[in-house]
Image (cartoon, rainbow, N blue to C red; front, side):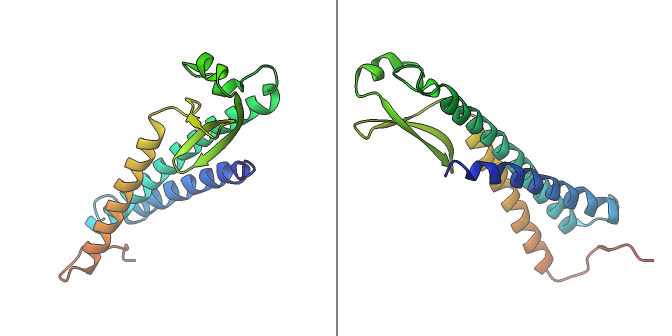
Length: 163
């Protein structure tokens, strides 16, 4: 499951560049003044998707760092190095940290003890998961609004430049 990181990081970067290209490319092709509300909403939705992908990849980079730290230095003491969060001395007295789990939604590095208990570490910054969710919801909202605007009857501004 950890090897999924090797696919998600480049895939997220490709998705981010694709969203950026679509958002700015559409506005550049049509023109800022000629673009109607639907085009603007689609472009903003694409840019929100790009922000979501970039933040998600940033979280995955933190996970990769924690996993590499465990792989390189995991057996140097009684507790895995990324699991040494505040209060780790007390947890080390109890059943020690036996293993770890990487969670992708939300992005988390979870240390599991021998008795089956687990705790989330601070390997991934606390702002990442709410930011990813916020940008994803904002992008979905813009895409939904663009869909509603496209179904509305009546005259619309030109979407494609006339040659």
